[in-house]
Structures are given as C-alpha cells and as structure tokens.
Image (cartoon, rainbow, N blue to C red):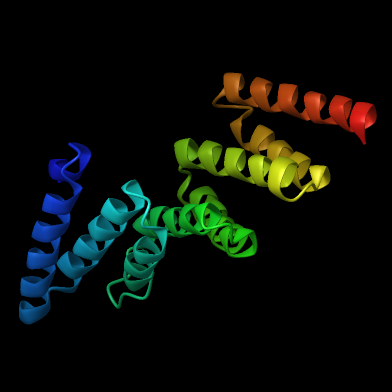
Length: 168
C-alpha cells in the first residue's frame, strides 16, 4: 500500500493491476474491490479523475457490500467529479457520503464532508442557505463531542450571514 504514497504512482498502479488480474482469476471479490479502490486512489492522487471514478464505481457496484467503506468510495467519487467541474454529480455522491458518515458515526469524515458542502455552496453554486444548513446539522452532531468543531461551525455561519448582508 505504501508505494502510492511515495510518488511511485506508476509502480503502484502496475502492481495493483497485476494483483487485480490475479484476484479476478481466483474470483476473490473482497480483494478485487480492494484493488479497484487502491487503483482509484492512485489515479486520484495523480489527477486522473475520470479513471479514478471508474475504479471507485466498480467498487461501489460490488457484490461484496461493505457499507462501512462505501462512505469513502462515495467521497472519492464526489471529489473526483468536483475536480472535473461536474458539480451536480459531485453533490450527488457527497450527499451519499454524508448520509453514510452519519449512519456510521464517522465524525472525522463528516467534518470533511460538511466542509466540502460549504465550499461548494459558497464558491461554486452560491446557495448560502444550503451551506448554513449543513453547518447547523454538523453543529448539532458535534456539539456534545467536539466543541471546537461546533464553535468553528458557528463562526462560519456567522461569517456567512455577515458576508451575505454585506455583499449580497
């Protein structure tokens, strides 16, 4: 796994492809999914977003469903679409990641996902009410366990209302 973190993307891709070919022969669905996921990540890291989406979607269509990982797959598909400028598709998969992160109580991922929604709704599609909606939802979720994140969300909400009154 560490090969793709060391700027050896083509080497990592080569070995993951070789592994995938063999896992396909022996029909090991969980390892096939894992290879597709890692190949998606490799291509994501080197900005080959269309190829990354293909690999992540193969993992999402797996017969060997592992709902605890689907949140990550949805997130990376969303992120890839975002970098391709396909904002509607990005939002669609980000919403799936959001719901999954809540269901799994994955608070670290939830914070990242909410930040992505806020970014999309303040810079790409200006819909401050949607940005505020996600921030308020996050604040409610984080209030009891992560007071710093809740406070930061309140700060961003205040800033959005201030900027809305000042500039819009």
